Length: 73
Image 1 (cartoon, rainbow, N blue to C red):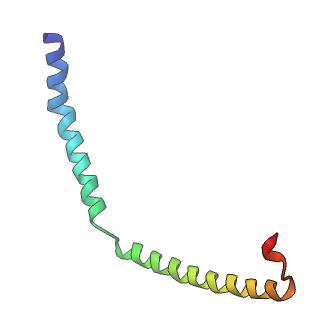
Image 2 (cartoon, rainbow, N blue to C red; image 1 turned 180 degrees about the vertical axis):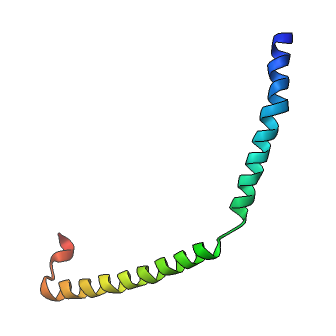
Image 3 (cartoon, rainbow, N blue to C red; image 1 turned 30 degrees about the vertical axis):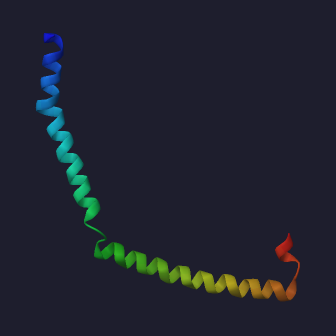
Protein backbone atom coordinates (compact mmCIF):
# COMPACT_ATOMS: atom_id res chain seq x y z
CA UNK A 1 0.00 0.00 0.00
CA UNK A 2 2.95 2.35 0.60
CA UNK A 3 4.02 2.14 -3.03
CA UNK A 4 0.71 3.77 -4.05
CA UNK A 5 0.59 6.37 -1.30
CA UNK A 6 3.79 8.19 -2.28
CA UNK A 7 2.94 8.79 -5.99
CA UNK A 8 -0.64 9.62 -5.08
CA UNK A 9 0.41 12.17 -2.48
CA UNK A 10 2.92 13.70 -4.92
CA UNK A 11 0.12 13.99 -7.47
CA UNK A 12 -2.16 15.79 -5.01
CA UNK A 13 0.62 18.08 -3.79
CA UNK A 14 2.14 19.14 -7.13
CA UNK A 15 0.08 18.15 -10.16
CA UNK A 16 -3.51 18.68 -8.99
CA UNK A 17 -3.08 22.32 -7.83
CA UNK A 18 -1.24 23.26 -11.01
CA UNK A 19 -3.91 21.53 -13.08
CA UNK A 20 -6.68 23.43 -11.29
CA UNK A 21 -4.91 26.78 -11.60
CA UNK A 22 -4.37 26.35 -15.34
CA UNK A 23 -7.93 25.12 -15.87
CA UNK A 24 -9.57 28.06 -14.13
CA UNK A 25 -7.22 30.54 -15.78
CA UNK A 26 -8.26 29.26 -19.20
CA UNK A 27 -11.93 29.43 -18.18
CA UNK A 28 -11.47 33.04 -17.08
CA UNK A 29 -9.91 33.97 -20.42
CA UNK A 30 -12.71 32.19 -22.30
CA UNK A 31 -15.41 34.03 -20.36
CA UNK A 32 -13.73 37.40 -20.77
CA UNK A 33 -15.26 37.90 -24.22
CA UNK A 34 -13.99 39.70 -27.27
CA UNK A 35 -11.28 42.30 -27.07
CA UNK A 36 -11.59 45.57 -28.96
CA UNK A 37 -9.17 44.24 -31.58
CA UNK A 38 -11.30 41.11 -31.99
CA UNK A 39 -14.42 43.25 -32.39
CA UNK A 40 -12.69 45.39 -35.02
CA UNK A 41 -11.54 42.33 -36.93
CA UNK A 42 -15.02 40.84 -36.77
CA UNK A 43 -16.53 44.07 -38.10
CA UNK A 44 -14.05 44.15 -41.02
CA UNK A 45 -14.87 40.54 -41.84
CA UNK A 46 -18.59 41.29 -41.73
CA UNK A 47 -18.11 44.21 -44.13
CA UNK A 48 -16.07 42.10 -46.53
CA UNK A 49 -18.66 39.32 -46.35
CA UNK A 50 -21.44 41.72 -47.29
CA UNK A 51 -19.35 43.02 -50.22
CA UNK A 52 -18.68 39.50 -51.44
CA UNK A 53 -22.36 38.63 -51.15
CA UNK A 54 -23.26 41.61 -53.37
CA UNK A 55 -20.62 40.56 -55.91
CA UNK A 56 -21.91 36.99 -55.99
CA UNK A 57 -25.45 38.20 -56.58
CA UNK A 58 -24.21 40.42 -59.43
CA UNK A 59 -22.29 37.53 -60.98
CA UNK A 60 -25.34 35.29 -60.75
CA UNK A 61 -27.45 37.91 -62.55
CA UNK A 62 -24.84 38.20 -65.30
CA UNK A 63 -24.64 34.42 -65.70
CA UNK A 64 -28.44 34.13 -65.71
CA UNK A 65 -28.57 36.64 -68.58
CA UNK A 66 -25.71 35.18 -70.63
CA UNK A 67 -25.96 31.42 -69.87
CA UNK A 68 -29.36 30.50 -68.44
CA UNK A 69 -28.40 26.81 -68.08
CA UNK A 70 -25.38 27.41 -65.81
CA UNK A 71 -27.21 26.45 -62.60
CA UNK A 72 -27.99 22.95 -63.83
CA UNK A 73 -24.35 22.08 -64.52
